[in-house]
Length: 324
Image (cartoon, rainbow, N blue to C red; front, side, top):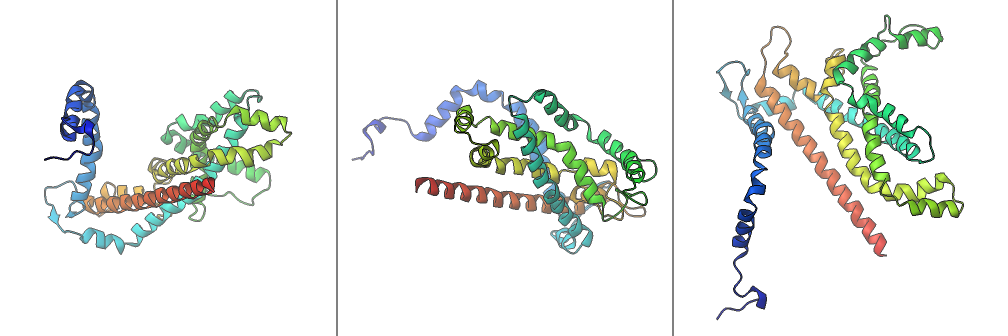
């Protein structure tokens, strides 16, 4: 005799058959997913699998002679000072840009979210304009602006007697990363502002009206009402901004190409140099570069997991405090 957990389950098909039946009934809908899955597989899944495979080879990428070396590329990378410096520089660049970018974007969003501010739409467009400009064009323009020979920025500094001689912003090892960070923040703060503006739309207008009737100052409204409401969005915005900061290859390649003396070489530039643009007299090392890409991806994944766990713990604590 068969015992059932629920009378309604008597005579019903197994869960697997129900799932298959639902998929089959919506087969035309799933058919529209096929082009997207093909593109995803061709440009995401296959390059990922190929990179892992290539990382186990001693291969230039331009010949049929490929030798399987196992984990030798990974062991060599962990002893390569250029790789370790590039990896460290990538994360330092992220720490240099993301906090400032989020702070400026939040300030702009709060100011421009004021409905009483005239021409707020125009100001939003002006701040967002660098985002849509091509990175290559921006890189060339900033190289000209920061030039120590005839750049207008150095001209203003010299005319104003702020400096004694021209500063080579992109040619000085101690200044190049700060200069690139400034260019990066200038370009991408507009998109961070848009994210914060979307978060501010979740704040009910009734709260602003109630605070106004109670005579609460705007600064107190922002600190005690607005910021706690939009705080959960900060983790998502920070993650998106960090991803942009780690993908800074176009900007650096258009401005310094990793120089001077490798002082601005981040991980993407290191991978590109080893795979496609080695120094004169050396051969490309596609397997070595693939191993560097795999390690870089693992490091980013590890940091993403840590951030997700931190966000989950913060939400759990917030829920506990709310229940108390």
